[in-house]
Image 1 (spheres, rainbow, N blue to C red):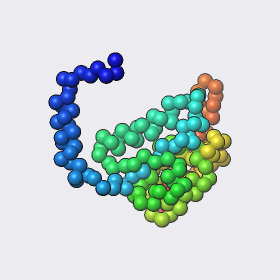
Image 2 (image 1 turned 45 degrees about the vertical axis):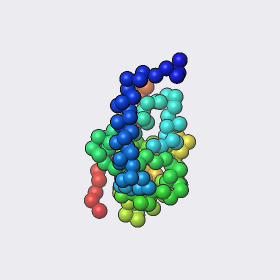
Image 3 (image 1 turned 180 degrees about the vertical axis):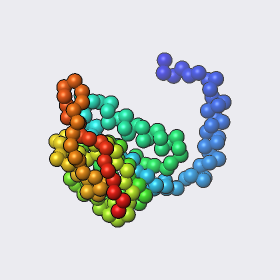
Image 4 (image 1 turned 135 degrees about the vertical axis):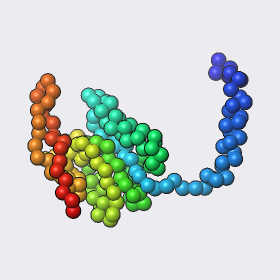
Amino acid sequence: NVFKFDRTAYPAVKQAFGHVRILERHIKNTKPIRYAALLHSLDTKFMNLPDHSRDERKFFEGFYRTMLENHIPFTVITEKDILDGNISGYKTLILPNIYCMSDTVAGKITDYVKKGGGLVATYLTSLADEKGNRRQDMALGQVLGIKLKGTITRGQKGDKEPVTYYKMKQR
């Protein structure tokens, strides 16, 4: 029965909502701190399914958990936020292995960085377009200051993986 409740929790819930009521005046009509934007890529998520359904999530969840546990203010965004121009107020944009990325999104991110925005990108970020077609090099390679140099063989099928060690030069 959905209407049957364990009423022993009521005093604790009442107390918790009492604390929320006290704090409400301090948080009502406030805006979140626009410090870091963590991209949850729907393009990468949907292009990886069903073969690697957890792969894209583990990168996102790793950053999410790290930022949460270290009390770093962040907002989760999608490609739509980037396309709508909603990243300009953030100090840093985080791209956790965003494998699939359209040229338009890459262009908006490049503009954001050229205007002073910070960028953290990991592993295979921007190596494929939004449909999962692999590029010759990363769409964000120039703004990141990296270039794909080759591949290594790994796995039972002899799949070619991009080399993930890059030499970064200070600008």
